[in-house]
Length: 116
Image (cartoon, rainbow, N blue to C red):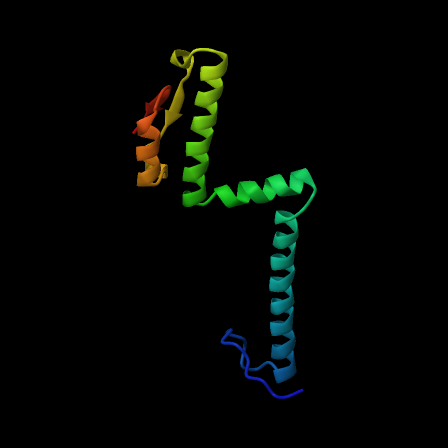
């Protein structure tokens, strides 16, 4: 196996070269295992695993903001179909939403109460 340069991960200089190499291999395999597990979870037929992957996905601001827009539209549609939107109360802080999503909600904000 050709001698390859090691990535810039600070390891104690007193360690032997083979120990440093072993530690870097463990780090690489761990990273691979995490990526493989995430990929498996996202494509899993198990509903609970897929749900957990979806929840992890919406936790960033962009996906959370779109999730809120979709949720409000879904609830408003259900209320319009089954009862009266005047009874709907959806408390919403705009600070966690992207500006384009705030504007989209304001176009049809039946039942939305803006906070903050």
